[in-house]
Image (cartoon, rainbow, N blue to C red; front, side):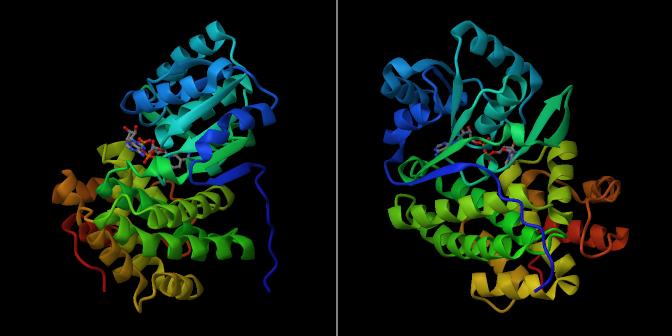
Length: 352
Ligand code: NAD
């Protein structure tokens, strides 16, 4: 056994079907009694029902969360926090809503309950990305880790089929990169392999039947494991490329992860034989990169960045940006290889 450091993250996880009904008890468990419910405008109605369910423990609703946590939105939400004199937040939604809860916690110390309805995994991480004047900066601090996470499988039944697939492969990306992280450890490696396996077997089922409760349960379980991987160890080339494509080319988060992952893994493959063996085992196939590409096809995701409006001409600029200040990566980052990787991802070629 290699020496390792394992840093456990302190959060309470409630998992199951219908667990939203335990929200009131979970607020009490935190010693709180006046919750502000957070959501995006798209989930306003769902969040209103949650507020109603809380009765006296529900102080109000703020449903203006948007992608990438702009500080102006946070500042507006902070006024509501103050006006309503709330003592905790309840974020119901995906990474965008949970990001707002984290941004409020950072500034106020208010405890958070996260109720994730996608597979992005933010609820399990001490990471917050915020946007100021169009520039996104990410920080890692335990102050933003939600105290309690309620996973309710029933809330994921409404996540549209293709979005479920790309969100799930976004989660797989966290586990894939955790397996070859510099600071990986045996516990995280177990979680990563199990998380990839749970998502890989459930996502194609969800693609053909989004209301399949058992597959939804497997996928959410996988998303929890993969989110824990993201929160616990460092990410490498794949996440750097996706941050570049999201930040500088405004490409959508989950779809970009889905398209880039097989190519980033093919690039790193020669340097990480142990991780490759685990990913093959989790996917149940002989070629991990091709297996992830095929999973993208099985869930109906776009195959190439071209379908998101990223052109051949963009490959050059994206390569230049991606190789500046690179994250640590198991294989040396060299411009020709990254250019080829992005060109393959742009065109939607199957890695082999
Ligand atoms: P999202 O939160 O932006 O949600 C996308 C859309 O889907 C929203 O309109 C949302 O309201 C809707 N939606 C969510 N769940 C639904 C459901 N069950 N049914 C119907 N509609 C639903 O998407 P996301 O991919 O979860 O999050 C992306 C954001 O999260 C990005 O800004 C990303 O950077 C961030 N993120 C942060 C971390 C972290 O650790 N800090 C981790 C992952 C993602």
